[in-house]
Length: 192
Image (cartoon, rainbow, N blue to C red; front, side, top):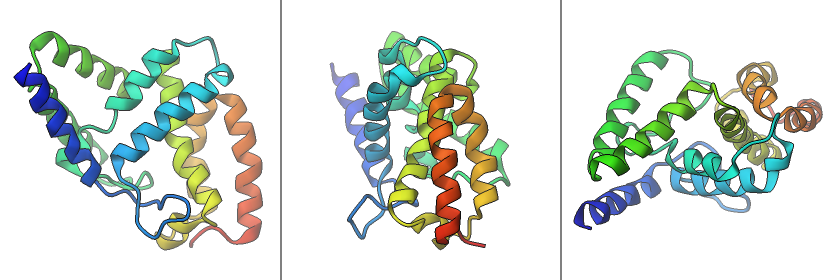
């Protein structure tokens, strides 16, 4: 019991990891715990649009663990390209530490979910990655491009970064977003 309590209290630190997008109607930036919760809800609501039949509970479990490593590493904007291999290695070490707080079978199960998400090879992980890439896009669309403008992110850079994963895991979502992103470009929602 104590190991599980220690793990849950360690997870509380995810609430302090600041991301680059603001929640709708708020002046502050969202945190990674909020992001993970919203992704789980989005996946549940959108599961019928996945590229193939999926186990939505498995997807939700992946989404709830996918950013836990940020407790140690912090969040990095999705459009950063330099140092990606080092960041991923640091995040793996972080999740191994954090899941290591749990009894072996629990920690191993969560690590397997994290690794599956990172690999993106199963239908569930492709859908989970699609949802993960789409949510910041949806927030930026609703916030008049807040994060894109603040960080100098162009329309082309957004499309290049998010299209492959969203299209692979949820083609219907990409069809929707492609139209919305083009309209956002016409409205000046992008930086540089």
